[in-house]
Image 1: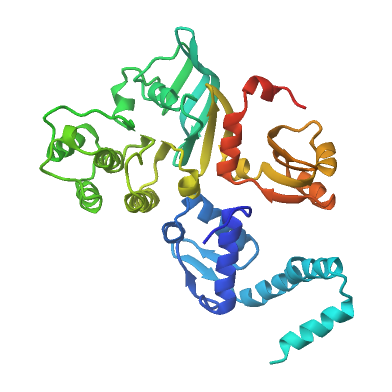
Image 2 (image 1 turned 90 degrees about the horizontal axis):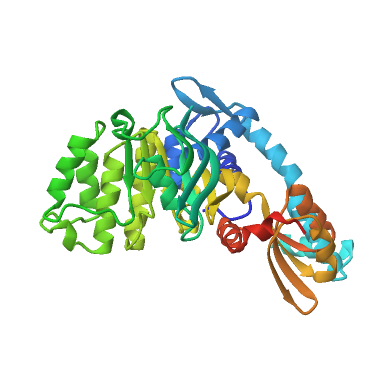
Length: 119
Length: 294
């Protein structure tokens, strides 16, 4: 499931976030242990640890010592806010650049999006 | 804590310098890949750490001690060679008994699980086994020994894709339950890079890189585009590979994130070099040339 170019721990952190957004791991639910993540994704446990540490630092996951790791209250909102910011960087800016290269105006683009969004 | 500490290690065989002034530390409870071309010095390095060969100069410490004729250290060490030899009349059952005698942490349950999963024949003499079956026996010993310091020298020779995948899964699952220090030399980077935490990259006996896999991976880029835009960016950088076609060029070059941004801003196409490409490119360097920055 991993691709070249982005560090594996970043990709794993994003995959866990996506599962939280999707509701696979609801708020308050326990997430798999580091060893489970490592074996499931076929990655070094140290890499799994980096991914999880990053999510703990950002307040997405909470570590309860001796018990495990849990999805923090408010984690879904937190992730949604962060992803909204990334939406511009990852999708809107490249879309604008491609449109300009093709000689499409902003209005052309808006028309195109509206057309695609209408069933 | 470090499991292995090597300082200024040099090994010469006559006129050939197999290892040249290597200094490195291997962390305890980590999986380290030993990377480099054939003849780079990978096997010699592992032989010296396990005291099966002696350094010409420099020191080796394993768990803080000199490993030479040191039973306390060597019983905690397991080295599976790619061409591991076994006594002539030996069958799998004998191998298991020797393992049990020799390694204090030996796990019988794990041994028989691996024998079943990798389909190792029980009634055949080890000397009559196929290349893949021999590799499977090596994997079995290396894993079931649960030695605090385990070496695998190209452990996958002759194994099919299914058996290799089984090995990677076994290795990770058992390592997660029983963390230990594992060193593995490999050419199969695409398959194994995610299993590794650290790496040592050797080229003609010299250590080119030593650190985390992520560090190595994020230190090289494949940049392509108009040569006129590309060339000015390369000044003072180590270019690992360069290909030209008319006005176009493509290079693999060392650099950080800032370099990548700068290249993108110039309209060049920038992608992180894969570990496979990086290691292949480093292997092509004549390192006398490599010392000379452009």
